[in-house]
Image (cartoon, rainbow over all chains, first blue to last red; front, top):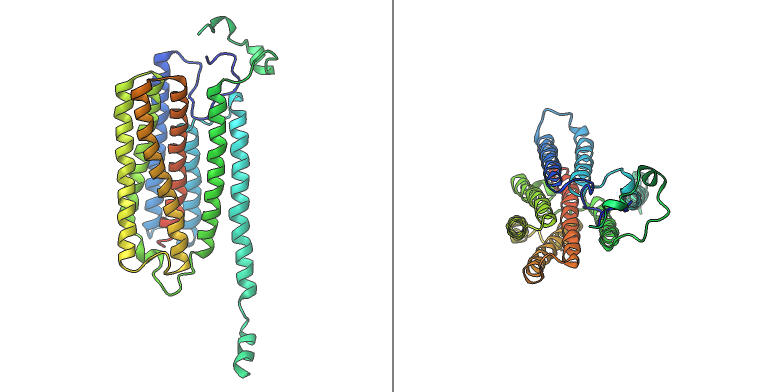
Amino acid sequence: MQDEMLDRAPGDDEPSMVAHDETHAGLRAYLIGLALAVILTATSFWAANTSLLWAPGVATGLAVLAVAQMGVHLAFFLHITTGPDNTNNVLALAFGVLIVTLVVAGSLWIMANLNDNAMPSPELMNLHMQH
Amino acid sequence: MSAAASIPSGRALRTGSEHRGPASKRIVVGYGFWIFLLSDIVMFSAIFATYAVLVHATAGGPTGAQLFDQTNVAIETACLLASSFTCGLMSMAINSRNAPATYIFAAITFALGAAFLGIELREFAGMIAIGATPERSAFLSAFFTLVGCHGLHVSIGLLWLVVMMAQVAAKGFRPNVERRLLCFSLFWHALDIIWVALFSIVYLMGAR
């Protein structure tokens, strides 16, 4: 079933292993993924609540930890790899990430700009008061 | 598997064999569902962007820092992460055609997902009870849209899991049932990925 296939469905594990080996390798991948995800989540919650870290940098740190954890989930739970059998899956993912980045960054940028420009300057506020 | 004879040679793997036929239905279905999931994530990104734009528009109402309970969120996160893990174990049980293990891991996955949903609904009820309703401020509208949309996905996933277990019981491990189970596990893992973004951006950054 798995032979002659150069593509692999997302979520499918390595096809090339013998039955019982596959179970072990699969379990190991899920356990590594779980351990990494727990560590990253715990670090996120710690970083958000501690006073040891430089406060303005925490938001960036949380974003980095979140991106890292999403990567862990993709690699160990969804079995997205960089192998040749995964090219289609990775390309689709890359396109998704591009659109997500454009939507989020673009919205924030445009709305911040609009906010700045719509805010009346102090002089303007004074003129209103004088009328 | 009449396959032993036709395992591709190393050269064919490198160059991309000229003789491979169309991809199997499992790969086509998995890929199609992967595209759907990515488009779902794009939809979530629009809601995330809306939330990020409106997060300070509290209109004199309660802010995130006043409303969010980190212990609740930690328990929710643990539930969803553990259910993602047991969903992976369920996929392994399905691959080895182990029906009892499939049911057990599906039941654990369902219980953890339901616990997540219960805690989330209790949090919503508590917020609405103190007047922090979606119509109180733009921030709260965006909050309930974003978190509620994720909760709705989890509810649909739970329903889907029940249907899939009924299909395994009634039809056994047929190829079409296995393809649906593959799609379900992709869906469930994707929900956990969205939750990672959600607890980081909404609850952890919002509580500061």
